[in-house]
Image 1: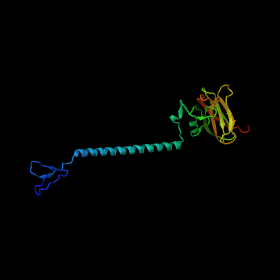
Image 2: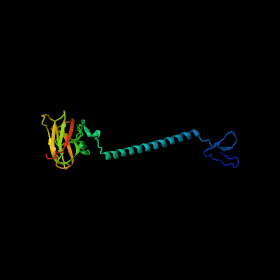
Image 3: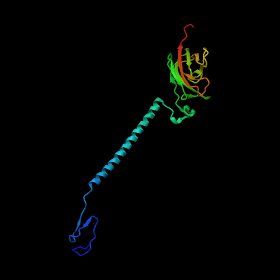
Length: 220
């Protein structure tokens, strides 16, 4: 477009507008900013920021929760089997052996109603065992009664070094219940082991355990 003053052509720059019909006057016309578009961009940016912050907060909470669970597992020695450790509804032997061994505290002269299950200690020849720990005094006479209507019981008393102090399969009453009477050779912590006599994997179920003790009478 020619310039009326110099006669030289002039190139329009971006943002300039040529007003035809009003002589050769050229004016720069900058359109006003689109405030609606700016608001949409700002809202989208805020949405992304809030989503990012929420994701970071959720990840942090899950991490803290997982660490708390790990601390509780170490504190209370919890090692429950996972669903993946089961095969056909039964706990694998490798998983059962890897669980933390912790006998259950036993109170004297207080019957215990419990259940022998596949989640207990696996035995070498099959079957499972459930252990209880009890403190006994030397020269005490201990009577251990084990009864069950689901399996043939077998009870053992083990010393702190793992040696067998006494064991019994069937009691004198002619049933498959167990009755063990033994004298304690040394004061300390002992283990009462409950298991089935045939050591079959199906030999599990509820049982009742009762332990009593009495000191020998003087001069007896």
